[in-house]
Length: 310
Image 1: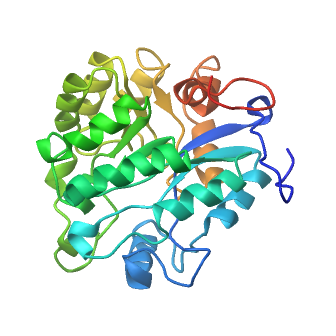
Image 2: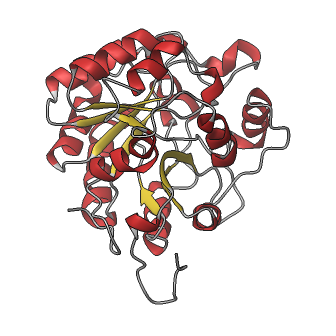
């Protein structure tokens, strides 16, 4: 794979990729020194939760370099939790999209908009789609303090569905706020996958990803993904050696075309994830689907040089 050449827009060579990581975080702006709204203290607590003291954070170009060296592509985003923090996301959605476009050989830009922003958030979503080419939107119901089936969020879903893009929902327990006083104000109840089931019913043509093994609601996630044809599951945020048996069973069988590799980088590195994935009892015919093929199909990436949407 080749890096970015000044003045050119790189193309993604899907065939050359080892994997597509559908879940990575940008915590630091390349246009300043500020971290995401959680700040250095929140990042430190997150790193401790995942056993990474002094966890390193990345800008978009730095993350692109990390994945280019691995011959992988990555979906990249920040998280807008304005309703909880009162702050705009750092880096801004526009920065993520603009810099990802400069590294389009390895990066797929998502945006994040807190549904509490209302009509202003809907207008921003349209701009990010029309002017910045984002490919999906990340929702973190716990950090944003809403149930996914709250009608407040439906105007955002309508914009995403109309554009044929992907909505990715955090599900299950979270490392955000874990171990801090009162859990940092995070309420776990918002991340039950069954609330996303309503979204899949009300927006039947919307592609949805349930992020993470959904502890303590793993069976609910499997039920929703099995029942709703456009609902997928990403495997980020957990080492595969901790995957519950039923998740492995469904990934090997009924959901083999709907399960996606995700690391949750930088809290888990692709190397650590893949090392444990190699030891998992996954059929050899299923492994390439999980690592790359399912994501390539979901994002409409064509094989060969120039992995642009089909």
